[in-house]
Image (cartoon, rainbow, N blue to C red; front, side):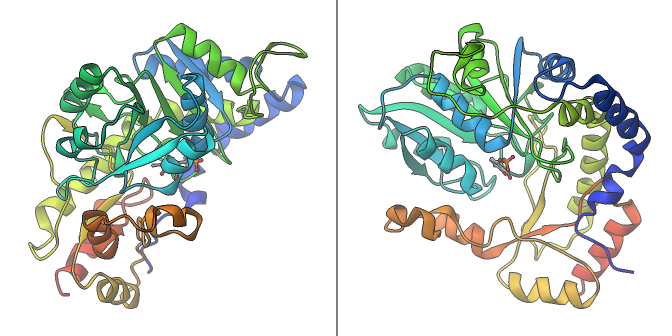
Length: 361
Ligand SMILES: Cc1ncc(COP(=O)(O)O)c(C=O)c1O
């Protein structure tokens, strides 16, 4: 039997009955965009994150782009972003008309290295956008201090970190604005694309609500140059159902992660664990010099794996203007990282089978 990396049919199966009921309700209501289901999810998700406001949008990329647009910075502002991330974090800066300034990660956590941020700050720097990669919170204390000291806005990319906590506080609650993705594979995933922006700032919230809807707060009156990026009623209804299980999903993933952490042999570089960082393991990665050989070996033994990510953003053709950057830590991570099965569909037995096979490599 193959151990799949992920299976989106099986992962959603426990919710099918409730989803069918929600589908029927939305169908009968005749209201498909920005209605009561979106309001309900926004309210539930704001409460879940211990924040006052949430606006549903069409994707995680839009959540970040709109968050940056809501800051109303002058075009061409410099925004600090991690070099080790999914390309969306960097694209959001470009789509909001700003300049991404890439900062290398800490080789132990894979998240932005706080010690390297200040040397990248210039007179044009206006914000820091951090990414809680793989579900592990960034080291927030030094980063929030840097933001305060240099009077910078703070945006969090929480696309992989729903429910993660830093020193007992949810990620997403540190930034001026924070963006989430509900892409189907995420710990909180919907049945299509979706995203959300959370904040405690009512002015920024009003801006995000306008920006997602053609820059309008009154029908056919447009105040800002906005987007069409609305979360639809069906996705919001499905998300409301799944949100109830998010803490259980995260707990399950953490249990599977702890099996990996205790039993994988030391040849593999494992994620660091620390009580201040409540990691929700959207992705469980290890690093190994012979990563490609290991992936092939696991495939032959019917175990599927993924790479997050095989090519770093600054080496992507789309971002060729960044290709001159020397980012050895990011490149080392991209060359050696392998993501192992760790989803709601997996049992402890599945994880032990992965471990037994890996320990023979
Ligand atoms: C770190 C990160 N940021 C942003 C995004 C963008 O989210 P979406 O695909 O919903 O636009 C993703 C999606 O995979 C992501 O992993």
